[in-house]
Length: 207
Image (tube, rainbow, N blue to C red; front, side, top):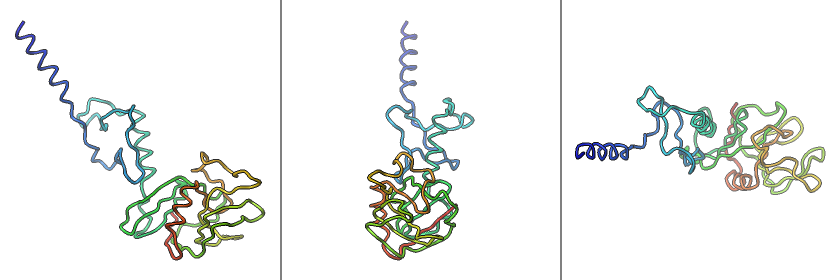
């Protein structure tokens, strides 16, 4: 009985000494990212999963894959240049505000144009307006930061326009192309861009 008790005690101690796995070193994004990445919530597993062939008994689940995909989606595009700049990805419908040290300070979903009127490239902010009106009476907007010109009007960042007292789209719809040419942002993000993007600020547009 003494031997059995010792075995049970040893088993209990072994089971309690579970080590939290380090993030995978195979190029996949970290599950915690101070620049807008994904953090594990209270209901998620405490361990960062790795592939089963790396010695981890717990299989990778769809939840883990979704988290990795979400983290990768928030990573700064590799072809976004360098230095202090604002970055807009057309395919991801996402913006990054980046410091001079190439550190993303803020990232968020936006709504770009439904038309093909903005090409990838490097631009500079040339005009700013706290209040503006869209073409063809498409509503009013605030915190307008212009960095290029389209076929009919200037293109830039601003908040979600208001037409006849109502927003032309919801905040939940950000991340989907819905504008006539500009890049629509949620109000807090539009204000952050306004504070960041002074005249001459570099803006990089990627695919």
